[in-house]
Image (tube, rainbow, N blue to C red):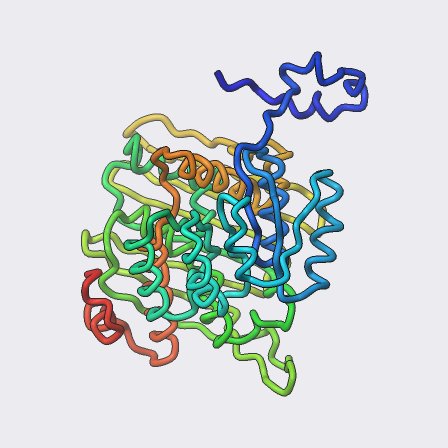
Amino acid sequence: MNKPRLRFFENSPSQQHITDGDKYLYKSLAPSHKIAVIGTGTIGQEHMRVATLLGRAQVYGIYDTQSHSMDVAEENFKAISDAPLVRYGNLESACTDSAVDALFICTPNYTHFEILKVAIKSGKPIFLEKPMATDLEDAAATVAISDAYSAFIQIGLQYRYKAQYIEAFHEALSRQSLGEVKTIAVSESRPPFLDKVGQWNKFNANSGGTLVEKCCHYFDLINLMAESQATKVYASGGRAVNFSDFEYEGRASDIDDHAFVVIDYANGVRANFTLNMFSPDFNEEMVVTGTQGRLVATEVFNFHQQQGSKATVAIEAGEHGGSKNTNVTYAALIEQSGHHGATYYEHIAFMDQLEGRSVDAATPLQGLWSMIVASAAQESMATGQAVDITPFMQANNLAEYL
């Protein structure tokens, strides 16, 4: 039986007199697995934090090419765990340590594929952050590697675990509350890309482009909701505000900060995606309309006011049934651990998969399709023309995935 953790009481100062021998609801099991985190920047530290909060795996070791990043990660880790960290001197030793059960690759986008080629020599299960590559050639090669791999590779498309989207999928696809889905509209408004080591995310060559780097999450969500393959993509966008005067080591930033994307699917579903990256706070919305109703899933994160995120799902059924508006925000401790709780449930999926259970975690093939849509949108933005997916995939040696 899964006991409730009751973390509020577990962590309360008034409950600290309870000794380990008397703990039942407060007792946490010893971690069953050990992981190594490769890349200790923002997302790497998030995975270290979430793994420790979940408690099913111990963060055993870390590796980063930047010693300062490892210093900061190790110091921050002391606040959440008293377990010592192994600091690996090179990538190979991090991947091949026999004490480690799984690897988390959390490095900059442009390094993912090269690191993966080293990591797979270990035969260990691998978590690979999104996007899995910066171009379709390496993404397709990652799928091929995964298909032949003795273990599994899970892609870090964790937005599918956000509370509002879990509920949206349940309502639209499982309960079929909307009837037959016909249109999907997703939008994100947020501040600019944050600072990174070497400012790699300000350049298309390093990130794959904004629609690959940031928006593969949303194309994954749209693909899942559409339950079909994209057939045509049209996009318009560019840079209006962000980084117009930014240079790094003599290179001018070329990253986009807004876009409108329209997607046609083989089953007749139509979708659109709107991005704005010069908004003061974070807002997401998914609107799904079917033959019998409309769903609106939202998330608002007003970080300037230092408020937690607020997620809701509304069902508007008209005369077809009951309408409702539900607050679906995760428990505060989980919601605050990273990406508004999605990373926590992503870790549960990884650990379940590690223990042989069937999960709905993002596969390399799904990661590839999120990149196909994103890359087609990037091409459409560049050419001003709609992109037909079949010839686009043929031109990129992806015909086998049609």
